[in-house]
Amino acid sequence: MEANELKSVESTVLEALGGVLGQDVVAPDVPFAALGGDSMRAVRVLSRLWRELGVELPVHALGNDTTAAELAAVVRAHLDGRAA
Amino acid sequence: MSDARNPGIALAATFTTDGLKDAMARRLQETGREIQAAPYGQLVEPMLDPGSVLLTHAGVNVLLVRAEDLYRGASAPSAGDRLLDELLPVLSAAPTRSAATWLVALTPPSPGALADPVAARWIEAATQRIAETVEPLPGMHLVSLDDLTDRYDVPETHDEYADRIAHLPYTDGYFDALADWLVRLAATTWNRPRKVVVLDCDNTLWAGVCGEDGPLGVEIGPGRRKVQEFMLDQRARGRLLCLCSRNEEADVQAVFAENPGMVLTMADITAHRIGWQPKAQYLAELSQQLGLALNSFVFVDDDAVECASVRAQLPEVAVVELSRDTDGADAAPRQLARETAFDQLTVTDEDRLRADWYGAEPERRALEQSVADYEEFLARCAIDVTMEELTDSALDRAAQLTSRTTQFTLAGTAFTVPELRRLLDGGGRGWTVRVRDVFGDYGTVGLVLARADADVLDVPVFLLSCRVLNRRVETRMLRMLSEKAHAAGCRTLRLAYRPTRRNAPARQFLQQLSGSAVGAEDAPGTVEVRVADWIDAPVAAAP
Image 1 (cartoon, rainbow over the protein chains, first blue to last red):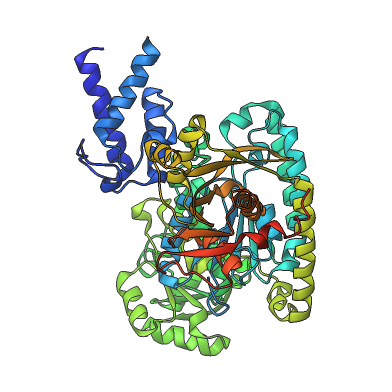
Image 2 (tube, rainbow over the protein chains, first blue to last red):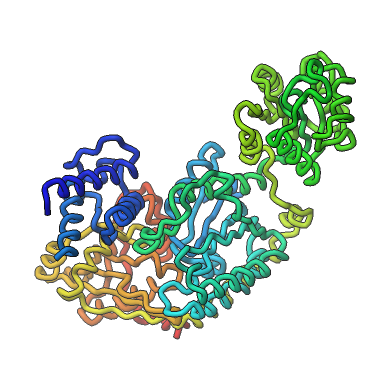
């Protein structure tokens, strides 16, 4: 995968989190719960990623302790797995 | 729980309602009323179970049915007939089982279901059967959601992926609109109804000033026309229309008589005050003339100063500061549609009398009938509960259950897979619980972890997914666990609990076991259960 595509996955994830949580800036290394996330919001974030990137992630892919960076890594792994 | 003096709302739906419930709770906050929800996905059970949130209060019960959920997970829509056949008679009997006001709404089918002709046909037929059942029932109201997205400007109704992974079929925006509408309808049952609408004239019924522009010079464009149509509809709903205007009376009369754009006529107006005295004074005079209290008045005026003055002098009057045409032709009609002072549920006299009619005697009978019906329903469900020894292959699902189950969990402790493995390696035991019934296989939905300490079996985890609550699965789990304890030489079960705000179903179960109530704020503790009580107990009447 190209470097700019990696960056775009990362920023898509940050935008999805920010959009659902109503925050302009989301720190990539803060756990989801600490950002104000809960299980309902997690579902909305995953739904957004499905719409925007086509990745089908289960509910527990975004838990209370998951950071944006970790979520982005999971999304990337799914995209890579699909491309392979 | 809401007490009889301040009844709230109880909610049951065929889908996940967490987001909706929160949105409704926010709107109820200032009223001091509460909202409670039945377990996920359940409609029939809480309408039968005498201890459910629906049958234990006298507020408003909201039932939300998305028809396709009745066959969710089945291979063909016709599988939903079975649940529908259970649901309809239970709906018919519901008003006799509770003094609450029932609101029933059929929520929009998913685009996916509508695209499938077989599913679409089934949904249409089911929708019609439910509507036909609900409509004639006293105390039960069918709430139309047809124009909800339009009235509330909801850009997107469905959330397809959230529906798939969490059975959350609608967007937050849709839930917000639905929450607002449902709470408004519920509020009409406990707020005093407004009976009189007092209307300003210039820039309220028409654009312009009749004293300056003349009867044909004032404008009645699409926006003001809709305002007048709205008021005519209010009149048809039984409200009295009055005028209150700073003008010469002849000028106002001339607009009514001569302007071809007028929808309202003077014949629609019950009383009027047109002149130069303060409007608060005119409102008080109208109140006297009509013999109706000011707290049943709505005052509609475009002028901010007039509105502020009435608000200050007559706080009991509902004041609507109406948008002008300059804000856009749609602004005022949309504002009126959102204005709670005009909300009205079709409440018949019969409904109002129900509270009196609903004395102790019929209540007891209805409850007894409800218990009998519930037992029969459970028997028809043919619920099959099995407990399997926890093995490595089930550790993932077990860990997931400990982290995701929040309602029926006694202690609420989350375990990771390595922690579970350590517990098993250290002499602990675990069982996963699988539930099936005639409607389908619910999969692994429960978990028990235990460790023997001499003749006591310590139980740090006892949990059940909310999908199978209200079906006596928990008592069967306890009975099966007692058998295991007995076989292992234990005489007592020691159930650890930790109260939380969310685990009310588990706390209720504890209360059944120990006889004493456990509150959400209470300290953690343990409840001891004699194994002999549970293995000697007769087996439940279930299959």
